[in-house]
Amino acid sequence: MKFFVDTADVAAIKELHELGMVDGVTTNPSLIKKSGRNILEVTKEICDLVDGPVSAEVVALDADAMIAEGRKLAEIAENIVVKVPLTWDGLKACKTLSDEGRMVNVTLCFGASQALLAAKAGATFISPFIGRLDDMNIDGLDLIQDIREIYDNYGFETQILAASIRSVNHMSDCAKIGADVATAPPNVIQAMVKHPLTDKGLDTFVADAKAAGIKIV
Image (cartoon, rainbow, N blue to C red):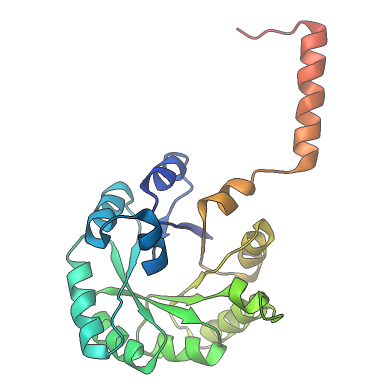
C-alpha cells in the first residue's frame, strides 16, 4: 500500500520523504488555509520535493469552472493530480480532465455507488472518507471493502485512496483490505512506529547495557 501524506506543511512532508515514507501528497482548501500560504506557491514547492502524485483541489462548484481551475493547477507540475468533489459537475470535470490525460482524484466519497460513477468517469483515484463515516457510527472500512470488491469485479483501474484516516488501526486495516493508497496526517504515520512493548523492551535493553558497561564506539 502506498503512503500519501495529507498536509500542506512542507517541513513535515520533507521529514517523512527523507525516510521514504511519502509516495505522494494530498491537500485540500482547509490544509492550504492552515499552511497560511498561496495555493500555487506551496503546491509548486511540494511538487518539487515529491516525485509522486500531489493532489491539489479545485474550489469551483460548476463543471466548466472546475475544468478551468484544474487545467491551471495542472500547469504547476507534471505530478499534479486535480482533485474534484464527487458531484455531478465534479464527474463532468473528471471526465474532461481525464480525457485530456490529466490525473484526477475524486474526493468526498461516502458510498460505493459514488465510487462506481467516479471509475466510469475515468478517475485516477477515488477518495472514500473513513473517519467521517466512523463519526456517524458507520464503519468506514466497510466502504473500502465494498469499493475493492466492485473494482476487482470489473477490472476498474481507478485506485482506492483511503482518506480521512484517524488512527494507526485505520492504516493497517486499509492495507489488509487492499486499498491502493492511504493518505494520513503526518502524526498518524509517525504514530505507526509506537508500541508500548517496544518501549518496554528498549528500556530493559538500555538498562542492561548500562549495567554491563557495554559500549560500541
